Image (cartoon, rainbow, N blue to C red):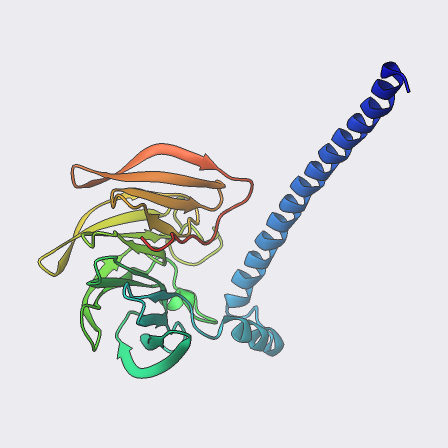
Amino acid sequence: MSTKSREVIFGSQIRGAKLRAEGARERAKQAVREADRAEAEAWSIRMELRRPGNRTEGHRRAHNSECQGFSGVSFTHDGKSALVARRDEGGVAVLNVDGSKVTLTKERVSSGIAPYAIDVSSDGKWAVVGSVGLAGLPGQLAPGDADLITLVDVSKRPFRAAQHLSVPSVPEGVAISPDGKSIVAQSLNGSNLTPKDPSAGRQKLGRVTLFAIKDGVATWVNDAPSGEAAQGIVFAKDSKTILVQFDVERALAVYQIRNDTLVDTGKRLRLDAGPVSIRTMPR
């Protein structure tokens, strides 16, 4: 076979493979768009089901079944215990972990209403629990209410709630720095509500709040605007860099603690879809 013949045959195959690859990429993008639309529709339906007068008994049972149960979970730094947020029942359950054997203890740690997200510091001293309030419970709607995060002493058993701190409504994400010196909370702040929701609770953007831990006490430092219906939040290993999930904007936003103050760097890591859950590996 001549060189020219091979170029014609293989060139045609290469072009065909490129076209198939481009078609596959376009179908993948379309699938992501359809998934986003479906998720938005599901969110809208859930919000409608929460409205009094919009729920049949069947809807109510289905919605309650969907929402029952637990939420966040996190191991302590030594790997011997785990904390589990009991969203519907309230409080935090404590598990003993011995290799592959996990047992539920009778220990409970106080929290706000509907505990949701949990994080534990790498120094083995602290955990933080975010409680999303009545808005996080089945059939409830509490537009714009202030909510709580809880600082938990995990340095010795039994674990105990050391401090409750007020934050804007629905702290979907909480994180404690690896060095155990800072807490950040990502609150929806009413940005998840629609203009039709009651009261003046609707806000365009959420808020990220910074607390400093010193001598066993957490103190409010400052806060900054975040995204619309923003979700999770994590610290980087340096205990200074923070990533926040901007759901509607489809991005990871980069914040930093500079001169002991929370600052939005303006840097955004663009994504193909809205991020809704984030975690960093053990630090």
